Amino acid sequence: MRLDEFMSSPAVTVPSFTSAADAKAAMERAAIRHLVVLGPGRQIAGVVSAGDLRDDPRGNVAEVMSSPAVTASPDTDVATAARLLRERAIGCLPVVDGGRVVGLVTVSDLLALLGKGALRVQARNPAWTLPGRGPTHHPDRRGR
Amino acid sequence: MRVGDIMSVKVETIPASATLDEARERMWRRNIRHLAVVESGALVGVVSRDGLERAKGPSVREAISGPAVTATPHTTIREAANLMRGNRVDSLPVLDAQADVVGIVTVSDLLDLIGKGVDRAPEDPGRRR
Image 1 (cartoon, chains in turn red, blue):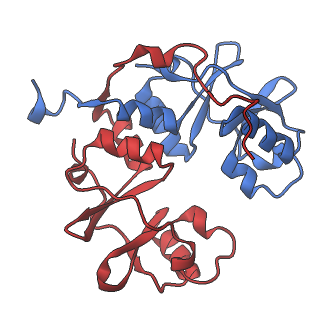
Image 2 (tube, rainbow over the protein chains, first blue to last red; image 1 turned 135 degrees about the vertical axis):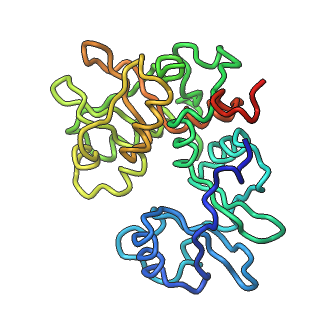
C-alpha cells in the first residue's frame, strides 16, 4: 500500500515565521498534533509537533521545529514508512512530491489502518517474538 | 496475530511512590521508555519518558495519566491498535486473568510489525491474489 492511498492531503502547513503560540492554536483548532512548516518558496522547512509547543510557547515555529524533516514520497510503501517512523523516533512523515508537500502520514494513521483491518501483518520472523526479547542495552556499558 | 505474540515480556515495574529521578534512572539503565506503575501490588498506570518530562509532582504517581488502558495476551493486534489510537496512549500493559502484568506492547512494536511487511487485507479486491 502506498502512502498516497491513505495520507492526509493536503497537509496542514504554516509559514516558518508563524508564532509558536499561533501554531499551537492552529493545532488545537484542527485537532491535530503535527504541522508542516514551510519556508520561502513553500519548500518544507521542518515539522512542529504538539510536544514541541507544550506549556507556554514563545518565539516562532522555526525555533522549535524539527529540521530538516524526514520525508517520504507518495509512492513510498507503508512498511517503509513504518520503519522510518520507528527508526527515526518521529511521529509523522510529510509526503513530498517534486519539492512540494502533498500530504502527511502520522503514526496514528498507521494505527488506524491496522485498527480497521486494512493491513494484514505477517509474522515473517518468529524469533523476534521469543520470550525475553527486549532491551539489549548492557547495563555495565554506560556511555558518558 | 495477537498481543501475546509480540509483547515484551520483561516489564519493569515501579512503585507509584518512587521519585521521578528513580524512574528516569530505571529507564536509562534498562534502555526502555515505559514503566508499569504499581501500588499495593496492582497496576495503576504507565509512565513514559515523555510523561516524566512533563511531570510536575515529586513522585511517579503525578506522572501517570489516568487509569491504565490495558490489553490481554489474547487481544488482537487490530484491537490493540484501536485501543492505543482511541485512548491516545503509546503503550498497553498486558494483564493475565489474575490481573498480573505479564507484558507490555507499545506503538513501536506495532510499527515494527508493519515494517516487517504487510499485505493488503483480503477485503480489498484490487490486489487479491
